[in-house]
Length: 582
Image (cartoon, rainbow, N blue to C red; front, side, top):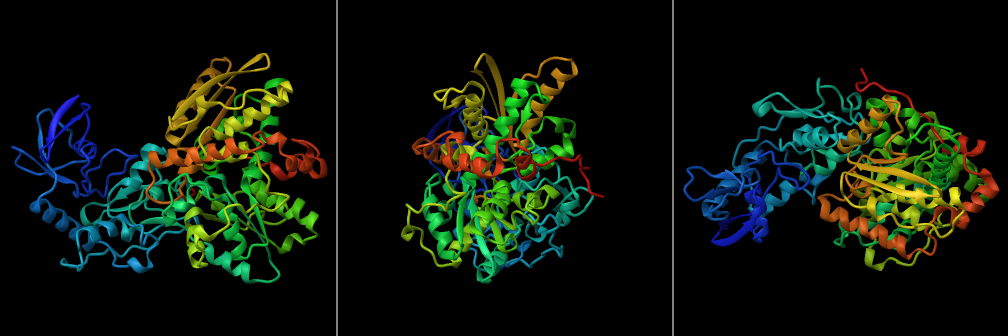
């Protein structure tokens, strides 16, 4: 531990802490623009400059270590002037398009301009003339608005290990783009949207498709159905000033009905179906030896894209089961349409996801057309949905918190809810796999060792007479560790160190998805995760196989998990893909 003074306040912090961290501990706010809690410092923006007694120059607090006996000044008239001038320089290289920008009202640069009373441009504008890149049809890259903070490059390269984005050129010509200056759709991009989630301005944002939904809702022949993902219910409220983790499930159902949707489903039901299929796959491999171990989960489309591009040698280990929202889409145009006497061609399916890559998933292969039509017509993010709520004039406080989803694709178990958190898919699968292996209705229900935000979580649990070893990885930079352990063992002819592996591309799982509310950090992720586990604990049914609607689905339509019909409608396949598309 070291001791220093900040604005004459005594502060004690661990050795290695930065001045910024020390100031935060002292309750002092130093403005930042390039620094994000998830990422190491780049010291790119210069907003966080401070003075150190005895030093000739100001230093950047985000990247400067606190030292024993140091005396720091974080605020005085000169520092205010320097920070204001730095902002004016950044704004001179930034388009004056706030009213039409996707980040209007949530932009960190806009916030700082307001804080420092920047009311006019004092420097001549030098905005670059660079075209917008929407080639992924999931996220949009607008390099003109880039402030060169480096957050997107850092998260893409160092956290996600994708390396789709980089800085090109130098000086005033510096810009973000894929290496080789190609379109983002031709790059290794896996569409996870973490670049967008970490961008402080409107340089990267989701591809907005809300207009397609409003159009469908106005068309009388369309029977519009909608589903909400587990993580959406505990993050939507943040856009309306509510606490992260507050569960707005009932209010969301109510809002969707007021918007005009004919049926409101819940992706949690699809999660329960996924568990029935994935658990059956696991039991088939572990009990009957039919298939390679470990079994690796595939609910995350960014992870699937990453695997096909970077780890195609592991495809035999992948579960063939589709993700929950894709399953709901298929069942909406088959099982539900048949029960309701609807022509599948008239059914328009919408999914509200915490994820940008779901926009890609709905057309990724022919299996996403298992109903004979595109199973999910449009997928939008939490952010897009929050805008739709505002556009429809709805007030969260006045919506019915006790509203229920529509049968027959709405009832869900607690296991379906926890899909939104890292470790939740594994925990849900183990709850059902235990029963399928042992028939024990009272087997272990909670597996707390695989909860939380540690990058890789491992656990061993006894199921029947067998010890099951599992691993959970989230944030793709952590996946390599697990996969290399598996590869090393298999190459040496040894048993895999794990029998079951869960992977989620985004930090924290879907609660930290690339389409969630802006300005996320681990404290917010933890609150969202706890919101999901609270919902799980209050559910009357907490195991997927106990869901009576799931049982009816198999009795009336699918027969049993892994049946021929289940495989036709609920399963997919994988193809090795090049990292670069041309």
